[in-house]
Image (cartoon, rainbow, N blue to C red; front, side):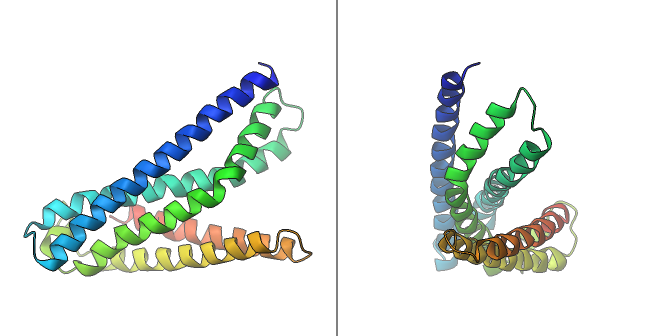
Length: 193
């Protein structure tokens, strides 16, 4: 494929990222609406709000993975200098670089909405899961991973503001370390259920 065809494919992927992000945010808005109705006492079914909020957590996971792929592609590009896929990787890297902040913001917003429900209603029996076990550890790993995500987002914004200065390398390193900490905590939280 020539460069124009690759650019055309990347424009399609870019549009898909934008549409998926908007759909994720709209669905998370629905989950927030369900949670607020439950909190206000307008709805008496914990089950009606639990499912959308669990799915919002999955959407936050997908958005964070898409944001992390940006970093992984950069590593692969360095390793595969003379690959026939070099142009594909370069174009995909530039595409994800363009959407990295958008994906990060989506992740923070959706993770907040996901966590709000479980923070407000963690003592209800409906949240116990199919194996009827205590979710206390899962609750605290969720809080820890959200706090790590907040630190990651703050460092990412700081790195973005320092992109034209000599402090850029240090802020990038801090952002990458925070991303690793968040990734580990998020994996513990996700697979603890």
